[in-house]
Image 1 (spheres, rainbow, N blue to C red):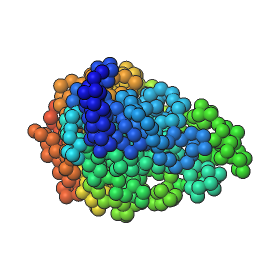
Image 2: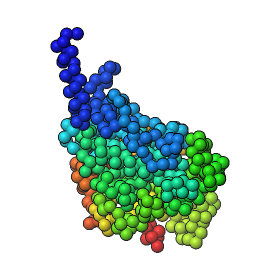
Image 3: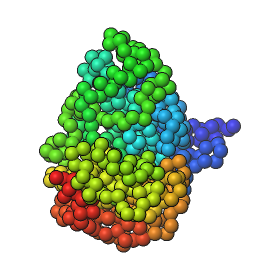
Image 4: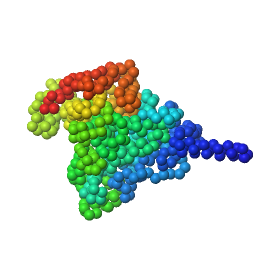
Length: 528
């Protein structure tokens, strides 16, 4: 090699280092021909990958692995690395049992963030950022279900997704853990806050604007968003909020500790003096099996969430950022498949056990029809679940009440996903009509989302049009604080018009009045 070529190589290397050190993305080519980018975050250089018009930086640590003594501790800052870290694949899924949201995982090293952006942008563009928290009942799910390519193609913005601790690893409360730190539970919620802080520190290096972060989530992700609205440590980390099929569900520390004590007993850690040490010595498999698939909730009445988030919203004691909020027309059908094949006696017995003092009135409103089939009990139970908001306040009148509470204090845009004939979450059982069930809207904005089988690839032309409309509505809200989609129905604020946008396929989305929504879900009955 000549001195001239050596000098040129050194200059090029120094230039690359300087550009990366300044947070400027630079084009690079891997040895295998991949086109990617290099960006410097606070802990080191990351190499992403370019696919089509999107740059993806996947599996970047935003916190240290919560293993060993860090299990059931607040997230700790990630360790720096030398050289260039490859960021071309999603990181490990957090520990969870196998479900339709994905396979079994026992890997606790799982606190990763993913950043996806339009390819080739100038980092000085300062694009708006959509920060997404996946659902799954705080028990399962992962960021790899939510590839942001479709949203980015439809909008000029950055999409951030994360993994956070789930189930017993993310939300275990126990008196021994409380004694250690003055509180316990909410480790997964604190992970989300740590990821939001990571975005504030690092998103500028990717071309994002830390002042224009919209936090969004579905189901348990929606519960999380509501909690962030009133959490002191989340204030200032986002400028807008978006909730799909969520609520403000939470539990007290005492309730959470009671459940945690049962879990500790189940794995042989009943001794109060040594419970924390004993629990940290248990395998991930043992803890997962002890927890099972029982629902879990965020804990309030602790330093990171002093208030009950539901009370905070209803009293106006929350961060009054603009909110886009809504649910699906048939939320309960997703949870009612267990009623398939049951008859009138089983359905009526269920209602009487659920509403012992109002059962006759409920059965008069949701009667067993003269003609029935194997799905009748499931459809009726699903309607009761939906309209009553019985499932942690999700759907129907529960969400209407929450919408009205938000609208009393901040700009609020309300929707109902109302496409009832689209593909279900699963083709089984054959013949079951999922309707606009819980999670039915996800594949329209996240084509990578499925429930064990592909969904988006089966869309017809009208459903593909609805998907593009929804991507544009959501993207417009992220960019401007007002949802709009070209050649589609205008979306007016609920707080000034008392109208919901009913999202329908084939360009048929339309505004409906609050009164029409209330009649659709029998809210006069349930509110009483």
